[in-house]
Amino acid sequence: MHADIDHIVLTEEQITARVAELGAEISRDYNQEPVLLIAVLRGAALFVADLARAIESPVEIDFMAVSSYGSSTQSSGVVRIIKDLEELIEGRHVLVVEDILDTGLTLKYLLKNLASRKPASLEVVSLLNKKGKQRVPISCKYVGFDIPDEFVVGYGLDYAERYRNLPYIGVLRPEVYSG
Ligand code: 5GP
Image (tube, helix red, strand yellow):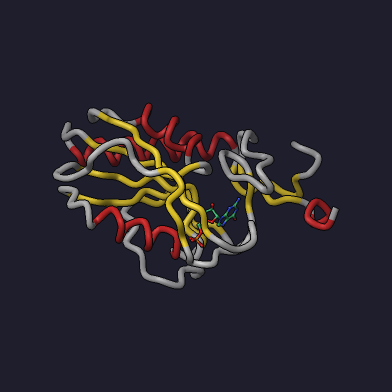
């Protein structure tokens, strides 16, 4: 385990198994209809890479980057699109791929924006969900894991751009924030 990690929340094995299950569920639901995965950078980059390989329906992948004003550990709800899609989504089945659903403010903004582009369907898959933290109701069709309200890193999730490459998801030692 990395020296900065206090404890592991989800092991690499747990993540691999759950991503395979999500892929199977999504493949069943879309039943060979083409699906456009829209991953939200940068946190969802690793998740979408694994999830796409677990889906049997024809898949395309596009990326969006948004920035939420505020500190790195707290969402402000004010969101700005930094990188928009390359693809037009009108009439297409869109599945937004998120790393973590916390207050839901980022996703709410994103979904409203995407819905205005008239996709045939618009659903969300989030690897993690901080249960009880949502400040706005979000309909997230696929959730990997419900986790407690702790700031987590690894498997794409960062603290100050670090730790994204950890194969597991864990909580940092308190002294890492103060140091
Ligand atoms: P929301 O708008 O739902 O509050 O926040 C969503 C974004 O905040 C996530 O996509 C992620 O970038 C960031 N975030 C929320 N909770 C965590 C966390 O526990 N760890 C990390 N690394 N980022 C988080």
